Length: 170
Image (cartoon, rainbow, N blue to C red; front, side, top):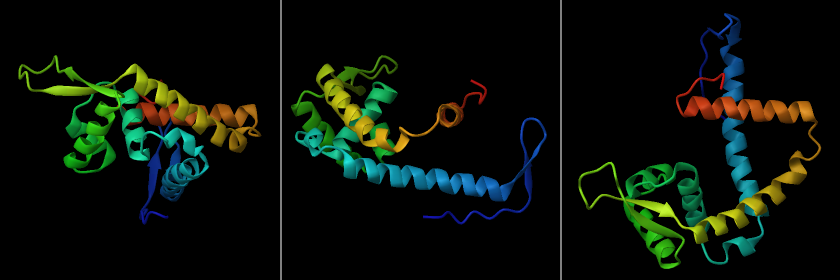
């Protein structure tokens, strides 16, 4: 998949150096491709035993809750890019399995406002999933030298910070 991003000139980085927009387009296209191909690879390579009790979509929902903390069903629908009814169905199944629970929303005065949170059982399922993901990706990354591994970590740290609206120097 290649994005059709048109470039018309140059950008400048923080030190005033010129960044060619064609290079930025290439970086963005690679980022998108790595996300898509990486997701497909992991789903294909993961030990299917991890998904004995929950679907991949339910596992993704648990991962969102682990990263984001207690979250509203509406936000979960946005994160998974699905209708709220799909989230309701997933949450119902996860609630029945004891992998998530409802928490009162302290920020809202409306007592009906609730957030969904992961339970210790849900965290245990995620530990199994994380281990399976690590085992699937390890052979791909094992032979990367220390310098390149450090660069990957640095780049992902910068991107994560920027996605959260923070300073890229963190």
